[in-house]
Image (cartoon, rainbow, N blue to C red; front, side, top):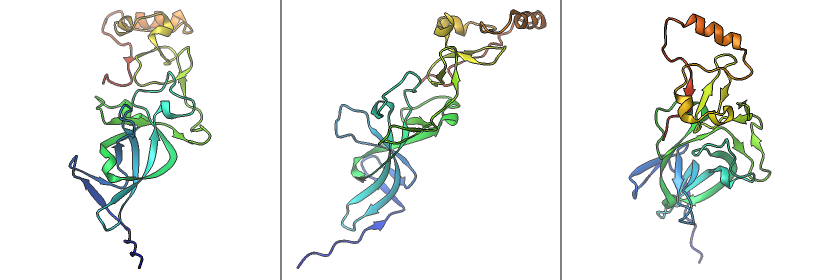
Length: 215
């Protein structure tokens, strides 16, 4: 006589004893890769199930790293950037190595410090076609590249656009020492007005930012 299949039940939470962390649906987790030389996979837990025999499975939605996408990693991709994919899977809860946080792009840029378990996502990714949503984002600087929160940038006080030091023939050290900055397209009249209005004070007003603190 065939054995009856144990009924599956959905769990509200599950504690991973090896790391002493409790996971719930909606949490983001790091999962052990099949190749130990690769970084941990990043996933969002959709559901947790038990088969009644002690085996616990997690239904996950994978985040892809830029190098795992069809187009590969590009210059504007941040080191902690991931894409929310349409790739769903079921994995053993035992493959979870830890919990992590996937921030929105805006909240990530406001962090005072970025930890090992902090990531950010600004795109959804179709794993079959390689398409991104949104398919367009704002670009900055003369190079017209989307913003990489790891990069140092300096803001023009005329047009308020942001520029990479290398794109304006400047070293990062020189950019950090700037008191004021006007890009090539902004008139010298703007500079004269600024200097006249600040001739009594010499404090630094130039906006120089990584748009993210150093990790």
